Structure formats: structure tokens, C-alpha cells
Image 1: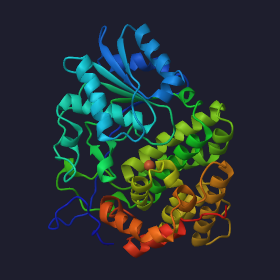
Image 2: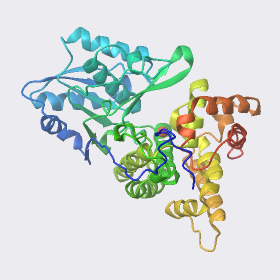
Image 3: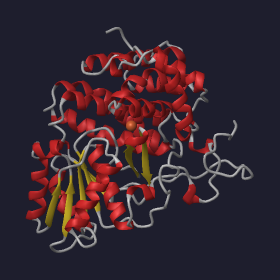
Image 4: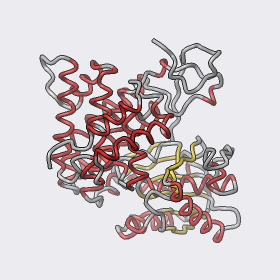
Length: 437
Ligand SMILES: [Fe+2]
């Protein structure tokens, strides 16, 4: 085995990684866990009549979730402002708007922050809290050359996140993803100081999610789980010369594998019910738990080729992340990567519920691809491929492949199977049509 895929060490230190670690927010999970939000904040040191900000968006406010959270916090003696102007896939300007709100309404920021909503609301809350605490503007903390690449040194006052979708994993991840509209790219503020202090996951907040959004976010979650299960092993990288420089995507470990396995079972087992009968709280609970477990695996072990390919598509065509992941997964995560370790993909097939008796490993991986596509068809709300997703044709494949190779090296270096630009183009081509419409 070679260690050439290192993302962490200088070339003179050629020893394999031997250590892994995991950082997590406090996690509170279950029906009506929202009613324990004030307790959670107190537990994090929020005292007396402290003043906090709930960051959400219009849709969540319209669904009544923001009122529920604000009333609960006020009943607990806390003083709460509401910011309901988060935007989808927040731009740098959107974060600046939220920062301006905080700076206009406080002397030096709130005593606590609550992010309520999907990944976009949660990322807005994460970025806002971090920048208020560290000063300056979003660009100061985005990597060069887009930003200044300064390091965050402060976490700021407590931040608790309440997801209303089951998918992104933003409630546990150490990144806030921001779009830079003039460059048509997404950038991240990435630091342990961005991570929330606690996540409160309440399936009753997810029943209002419409079928399309339920399906998209589920496919993102399933992507995290499968990519996490099939990415490189943590000890196939070089050892970090400084533990602080261990890469964010550090490879799969026994812990992440366990979470992936459970996530794949929960998500594949309940997604049909959650999409077709949104009020089914058992299914919603499975989805929220599956998405959390998928994130614990995928967002620490590491996303791979599929996520790398999804970013150029999303930037260029403004597609939804989860939908993009859905159309790319069969060709990338499953078909292309299966060759890296067919036995492992045969295991995924089994976990996914495929009857693999008597099959070779490669045949089981192929059966997984078919089952995965069948699942998407059954949901009835997902596009059949990149073509239906955004009108992408053969003509765009080469450009997309070039973009992927040029801008996604961080993810590609961790892919379990090496990739060339030609490979990526082939995978894009394969993903144009997953089924005949
Ligand atoms: Fe994702």
C-alpha cells in the first residue's frame, strides 16, 4: 500500500497515521426534544435573563417552528430576538446582513445563538456567531485566494442548532458553507470554532418538510453514509506532524463504520414512508437519526468523488445539493468506486437490503446500484439524471470534469480509487440518465 494520498504531512515524514479522534457537539435527540432547548442552553452556561438570537428563515417561521422555539425560551426567562431572513445556500452578503442585524441590536453580540432550520439556516448561525466573536467579516476567514485565510481563535457564546430537515449534517459539522456569487463558487469557513456546542434533534420539527425536500435531504444523508463507509481507511494517510493539522476528512474508523451501517439501514428502510407519508413520526424519527449517523460517519471519515463532482454542478446550475448527490451517487460512489474494494460494496448492498446470496462481490455492487436507482424512482420526486436535473448534456461533461479536477483536489485526494479527468468525465456521462424518463 502506498501513502501518496497524504493531505497532512511533509514528504520527509513518511509514517502512516495511527491515531484518530472525533469531535462532536452535545447531542440531544427525540420527540419534543425542542422542549429541552432552554435546559440545554443553561447547561452550556447561559444564565439569568440572558439575551439570545434565533436565526431561521421565512419558511420555518411560517410553519410555526420559530414561534414555538421563541415562546419556549421566553417561558424559561430568556430574552430572545428573531432573525428570519436566512437565505438558501447563504452568500457572503447574506452573512453580512445577519452580522449587521447583530451589530445593530447589541453592543458586542448576543449571549447565545440558536440556529433553526435546514443546513442554510444552521450555517448562517454558525458563521454569524463565529464572526461576531472573532471580529471582521466572512472573507477574513475564508481560505485564500478568495478570502484572507485568517484562523478563528474564539468560539464565542453558546450556539445550539435545531435541524428541521434530515440530511445535511450541518448540526454537527465544523464548516459553514457560503456562496461567492460573483465567482460562482462555494467556499467554507472551516474550524472547530465554527462547530455548534449542542444539537437538539426533534423529529416533530421535520414533519412539515414537503416530499421533494424530504427526498433530496435523504439522498444527501444516504450519500454521507455510503461515502463514509467506503472512503479510505484512516491509517492509509500519512501521520500528521501536528495533531492540530490532522485533516478534517481523516478516513474511516471502526467508530464511523458503525454509524454508517446503522445510517444506511435507517435511511433506506424509512425514506419511502417519510416521502409518501410525511406525518409518519416513526419514519421521520428514523430519517433524522439516520441523517445524524450518516453525518457522524461521512462528515468525519470523509466525503469522496460524488461530493467532489456535486460542487461544480451546484455552482454552475444552482441545483439543490441533495438532488445533485442523488443523481451522481449511482455512477460515482457506487459504480466507479466499487473497483476500489468490491467486497466492501457487497457489504453495503447487504446493509441496503439487497439479497446478495450467491453473487460475486462485483455482481452485488452492481445490484446495489440497481436497487439504489429503484429507490430513487420509487420516491417519485427525484430527477432521472443530470440531464433532467439541469438540462446537462454530453457537451458540458468535459467542462464539468475539468472543474472537478481543478477545484476539488481536497476531496479527490481522499477518494478510495484514484481519478483522472477522463475518469470524472466518464462518470458524469454515466450520470446523465440513470433511468429512461
Ligand atoms: Fe452532502
